[in-house]
Image (tube, rainbow, N blue to C red; front, side, top):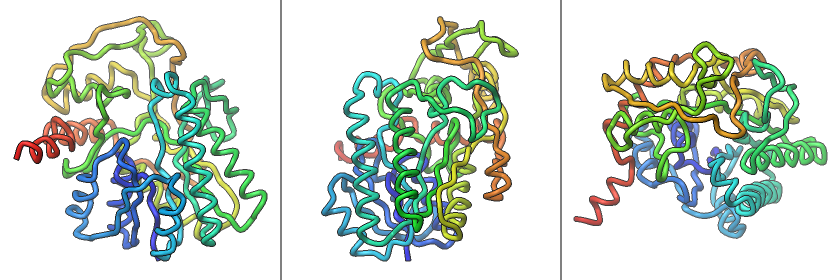
Length: 345
């Protein structure tokens, strides 16, 4: 039996593949490489000393996806694949709705046809929109405020409807807060295409000299230092959360939703300071105006995941920044540097 990992070459997917293999699971990876690099999977094999089949296909290619299920005895699916940039989703909403919804519905249809009904879905705290209170628990009202978040919200509803139509399904919906960090080896990490959309990889690229300064959007929020506060979670803790959720769905039926975060918030300036200490580099920054839609404070209530999944985030802000810096300094141009060298050779 094997676990199918969609988007397994991506940031969170590759780290989860490492943890699955280290825990003794067999995996099969499907990834269309639209926002990832096959080198990540080579390094997963290197880190674990275990090989696994990979298919570079799109989830909307039903025949190819069905072939994967027919070729392997798939036991459960962890579904990471999807477009994920908030800003891009505002520019190209139709692409986000089409790709994220169609890929997920096609996946579920092929799963159903092959009698595979155990699924972990990679959702996001963006479904909460502007929170009415913090910390945010799983019963908080949802109301995403951008197309990316709305695709996650719609898919969550699709999965609830699917389980209601067939109670033999077992689904875990995992709402991530702000994944950061990298594998302690520095061999795999976050490799954004173009200018990073998220704070920590942006800070890392300033530290390594690829970017000149960090823009701090707003310093007049009702927080300790006036800058926005978010819940940052180490990607390895996040990956281990998927292993715990996998055990859950293999033992139960129905649908459950869990926040994956630390339950603690750090401000933008605190993250910059922590990264300076981890890297030994000065991080220049400039205060800018608030961005529309940004909120002052957002962090998770994690009691449900702690209790029901027996999972807790163990890695702190120092380790998050230290591991991010190790990855960035060892791979200043990410995985793409290898492709460039190969072309030159």
